Length: 236
Ligand code: TIU
Image (cartoon, helix red, strand yellow):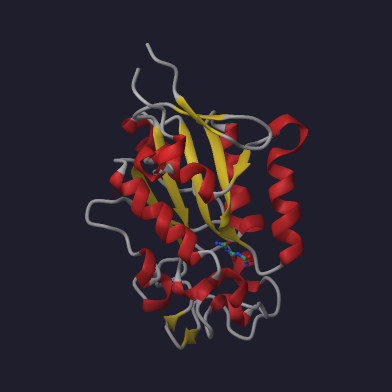
């Protein structure tokens, strides 16, 4: 059996075993990325998240071409908010709360325009979209079963925000035995400091709950045809 290909990462090479790797795209929703949405109502600079879109769109295209399972997630709630804990509803002092009417429909409510994924990263036909009421993608969802049924053991993790839903999901995945590779330029935070430290937290202590690399490192491994000709081993 040939060993799996690996991606250079921090703190060490991350294996991509054939047929066992999925791309997870976390919460790339209008409510978090567009001006006027939930993210901005919390007082955040949504421009900080926009920079994730071009590299993530490239990774998404290559992952599809390479035949990886692509899974999208969306944070949000039922229209009656029965799945939203009162503590989450009350939290902070946003100008608009979950369920309030906003420029893109009711904020973080399933079925509303703002709850859906941005056009640039729209799920392709057949790609699972996991709706989650929490920050982590495993809590109160079918993600674990979906991954187990597909034989997935390794996750390439992207999306927003680095220190909230990406961190929570990677920690949940790690506790469930999945190996996670976070792509630094394909995850985003409203706070540059949290982005930097959040990524360090993942791979510190010998990869305490994951690995970190960037899209330029992973793309040619996913699709060897993207390697420059000089890097392709010549046949013997
Ligand atoms: N506020 C913030 O940074 N994030 C969230 O509320 N949700 C996600 O990270 N998706």
